[in-house]
Image (tube, rainbow, N blue to C red; front, top):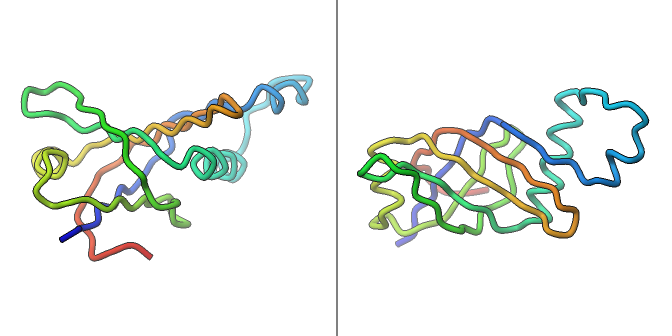
Amino acid sequence: MNRHLAVSALLVALGLPSTAAAQTPQAATPDRPQVIKAARDVMQKARFCTLVTIGDDGHPQARVVDPFLPEDDMTVWLATNPVTRKVAQIRKDPRVTLLYFDAGSQAYVTVQGRAEHGAGAG
């Protein structure tokens, strides 16, 4: 039986495509709605992301996952089997990182947050 994990996310970093940077004569700090819009674009194009949890030995553990698109509040849902190591690691320490990379635009988004069990996506 699959369970869903929700990552309530805080957007940490965004690598903008080089074409976007080239169109701006001076580097200006984008406002939050611009960052969220750009992040969603990268997240959608990337499709897969890397989920990083904290292992029993305290070291980061990374694996590729296929998340749902983020909700309006940037919650990201992942479907997984509840008996996996990643679920056990999240139960022990809910801090996680998601890394999305879109090879086409050379853009990335890093999201940090806390994972928790949910009833389902959508």
